[in-house]
Figure 1 (cartoon, rainbow, N blue to C red):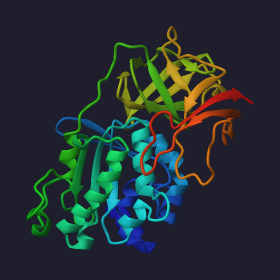
Figure 2 (figure 1 turned 135 degrees about the horizontal axis):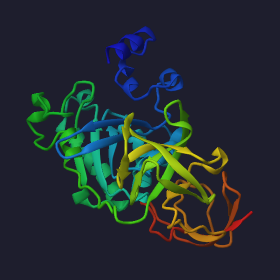
Figure 3 (figure 1 turned 90 degrees about the vertical axis):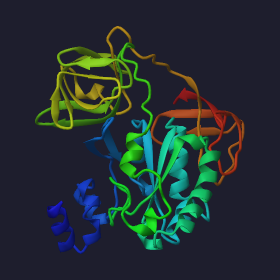
Length: 346
């Protein structure tokens, strides 16, 4: 941390020192924003926590989605300072706070901790906190979050108020008697882990390193278990590979099970057959592969109406989709039939 503080001050970015604990790349530090998903590990009383620090900037929403798809719960960090919260809510259009809230829920994350940060900038005002809670709470409930699944935590990260221990500043402690952020994380409900089912590990990223080898992947074990020296089937290529190394937080493991975020070194397979979005499976129980499918798509902040009969083309996959029906909603995450399309190979 002292190194980050020193380097940040030298570059005239002293206030970014703590952010640099997760933003390690030169580009992130130069631009002053999170661009990739940073990973960190820490233990609480009840859990071994994997923290996926996802980008908040609108240019890196795809990377944010990569983090959300691996999450069991989410911490939505909201800026309480005057003007910043309103900007995030999107007075003109969909702000980033709204967009991220919608995306988190649409990817199945039900438990949400709202960290109302920078409370020091508003003198730890209870009125300001209640305003943020009221305005954002209405929107979150419209997205499908249950009130009982939302935890609200006012804090100041820079002042270390209400982060890992209860607030010491009387301007906050005099009116807020809830949990600090660490306690809120430790109190989150853990999802059911099904270890008895066949292995399913969606590939989040394809990497290479001196330790893991030239062909390595990282991701979260959704169900089942995986062991070193075992065989896995890489889908959709249908190629077999051998698990050479399993790592978690740079520590070698002999096995991993449902819920573990890991990196795996593979051998006996050509890198061309391994890609982000693929799935590692038990060789006897592969995931299904289809040439066409019916899907439902959530569309945010569109300027052109999507009507039945419209052809929708994917920007990064060779697919053409024919829209069957639409369902319009306002200020809420659409119900599952928001946009139903048939997708066909190009």
